[in-house]
Image (tube, rainbow, N blue to C red; front, side, top):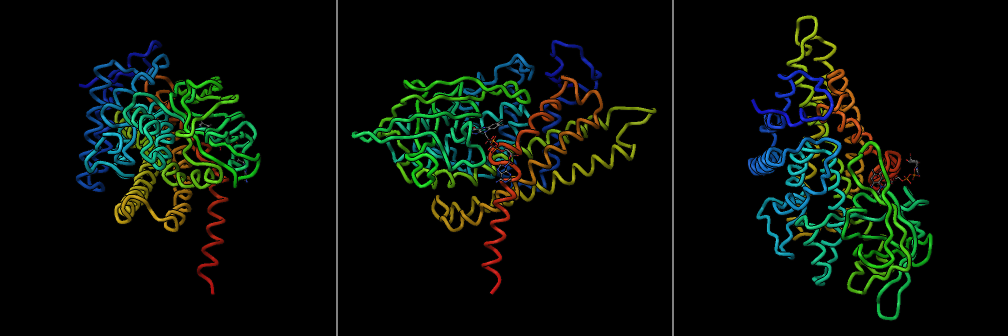
Amino acid sequence: MERNNMEKTKYAQAVNEEIISTLCLKNRYSFLNNNLTAILSQKEFNFLREVQRFCLKFEKKNNVTHGPDEDFYEWVPAFGAEGYISRQHNFKMCDVDYGSDWGLAADFMRCLAIDMFDPQFNMGGGATVLAINPIYEHHDNVPGRIEALKDLVTGKAPGCILITEPERGSDAVHQLTTCKEQGDGSFILNGEKIFNTNAPKSKWAVCYATNEQNNPNTMAQFLINTSWEGWNCERVYIPWVPKLYLGKERLENLRVPKEYVLGGIGKGRDHLFEGLVPERIAICMMSMSECWSAVAHAAIYANLRKQFDQIILLFQGVGFLLTDLWAKTTNLTIGLLKFCEAYDEKVEKFGGKIPQNISQALVASASQFKYQTTKLSMKVCYEAANLCGGAGLCDNTLLHDLLNISRIQEIVGGSRQIQQYIMSMALRTLFKMSVS
Ligand SMILES: Cc1cc2nc3c(=O)[nH]c(=O)nc-3n(C[C@H](O)[C@H](O)[C@H](O)COP(=O)(O)OP(=O)(O)OC[C@H]3O[C@@H](n4cnc5c(N)ncnc54)[C@H](O)[C@@H]3O)c2cc1C
C-alpha cells in the first residue's frame, strides 16, 4: 500500500500504521475524484488529474513530509516550470501557453490538487497570483513588466501585493503611503505596509500608494523590484501558518522608474477594485479545497477507526455529522464551479476582458462566496479534525494544518464584516433597480 509521507514526523507516530498508510495523498485524491467525476467536465477532470499526478510524483521524489522544518518556497520553481502557479489566464505575452487549460475553472482544479498536497504552500502561491493579476492587466508590453510577469508565472520568484498598512486595513483606500512624481515620470514612495504574504521571499511586489494621504482619488499602483534601494522588509510571524513568510515593509525614498508605474495618480483605486473578484474567488477555491481535504481525511479515518468494536462512521453522532460536512462541501463546490464557468464564458464572449458593468455585478457574488466558503472551511476543518479525535490534532496528518489555515481565510482579502457590508450595499442597489 502507498505509504503516507506524514509518517516521517520526528515525533511519535500516534495514528496506527494501517490508517496512516490509507490516508496517503493518492487515496485522498481518489476520494475527491470519485466525488467530482459526475460534476466536472471531462476537460476539468483531466486537468485536475494532471496536477494531481505531478503532486504525487513530487511528494515521493522529494520525500516531502509536510513537517515544520520544510521550506516550501524551494518548491516554487518546480511547480512554476509546469505552469502550476496560476491558471487564471493564458500568459502568451511572456511565451507561456497553456493551451485551453486556463480560466477560473481550470484554476479551481489546480487549487484543489495543490491544496490537498500542501495547504500552506498553496496559500503562498495564491499571494503570488495577487501580484500576477495586476501586471497581467497592465503590462502594456513594457519589457520590465513582461520580465516580472514571466518570473512570477514560471516560478522563478514568488511575488506579493502591498495594500494593507499598519493603520489602514479594512479601509484600504484611505492610504498613508505616499507617491510623489518626479520630472522624469518616476515616483518616490514613502510609507509602511504590513501583512504582505510572501514579501520577505519576493523578488517582485505590486504596491499601492497615494499622492495625497487619505485621498482615494489620488491612488496609484506600482511594480517594485525588492532589490531596489529603499525597500526594507521584516518578517511578520503568523503562528497558524508558520511556514508562510509575511512582511512588514518600510519604503524609504524608494524610487520607481517610469516603466514600472502600472497605474498613475488617479488610477490606483480602479486598479485595486478591478482585481477584487478573481482575488476573492481564489480565496473561495482555497477554502473549498481545505473542506475537501478535511472531509477526505475524516471519511477515510471514520471508515477505519474502531471503537466499541465498531467502525466509528456507524455511530450516528459521527456518520451524520460527517454527511452534513460532506453535503455542504459538495453543494458549495458546485455553486463555486458554476460561478467560475460562467465567469470564463463571459471572458471568452467579451474577448478577454469582462465589461465593467458586468464585473461590477459579480462583486456581490464574489462577496457572497467569500463570506460562505471561508465560514464553511472553518467549520468543516474543525469538525473533521474533531471526528478524528487525537489523530486529528497531532502532527501525523495535514488536519492540524487545515484547522489552522482555515481560521485565517475570513480575514484575508477583506474580513467577514466587510463582505457583509459590500453585500448590504449591493442589496440597496438591487432594491433601487427592482422597485418602481
Ligand atoms: C495571513 C494574512 C495574510 C495577508 N495577506 C495580505 C497580503 O498579501 N497583502 C495585503 O495587502 N494584506 C494582506 N493581509 C492583510 C489583510 O487584508 C487585513 O488584515 C484585513 O484587510 C483586515 O485589516 P486589519 O488587519 O487592519 O483589521 P481592521 O481593518 O483593523 O479590522 C479589525 C476588525 O474590525 C472590523 N471592521 C473594520 N471595519 C469595519 C466596518 N466598516 N464594518 C464592520 N466591521 C469592520 C473587521 O471586520 C475586523 O473584525 C493579510 C492578513 C493576514 C492575516
